Length: 247
Image 1 (cartoon, helix red, strand yellow):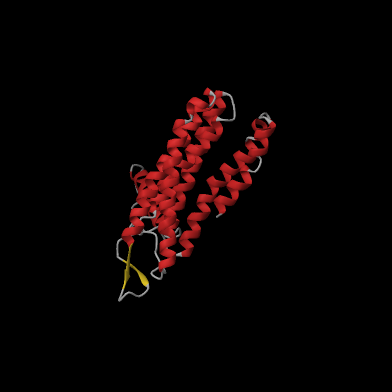
Image 2 (image 1 turned 45 degrees about the horizontal axis):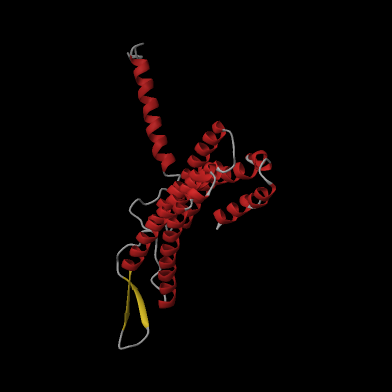
């Protein structure tokens, strides 16, 4: 005579249901994570090994020029606060901080670029450029943007004579959005797989579009209250940021 299978008791049923839900969550985690491309945390920005001496030297000289330009600009900006209206001194000080940060990172990029290549000439012939095996740390650019882009947006808000509450609100929103934009862009920068690069590019475009929308549409009323000369200068701001961001 066959026995009927034992039915779980009332105490066992919730326990089995929880175990089933936990199993489904774990299975979903691994199946979903494989559907999205994940960056390689050990990767660095890929460098081509076919640089000519002229190309290498042009980049070398541009970085040197950037260090000199940003460093001298920092000195200039920090000498100017006594010559401007009190309301704009904070913004001018922030400008000097931005160029100081840029100077530091240009120096780091310059050193990393120099260490990543070796330039040599055999028997008095043309110079050749070869990789040394040392990684070129492209992350310095993104760390620079992570600090300077929010500061530049905050500086813009500070010079628009907005109510204090609106200044704090816009500075917080634009600062966080721009930080997220840069942070999402870096994982794609260091990958060679185009599908992964495009995935992270699409993600970074979400906060970028929010920043552009806020500057071009959200600040329309505030911009209209500025002097006519200021309005003419700020009108192309949105299209310029859009072009620079897409580049």
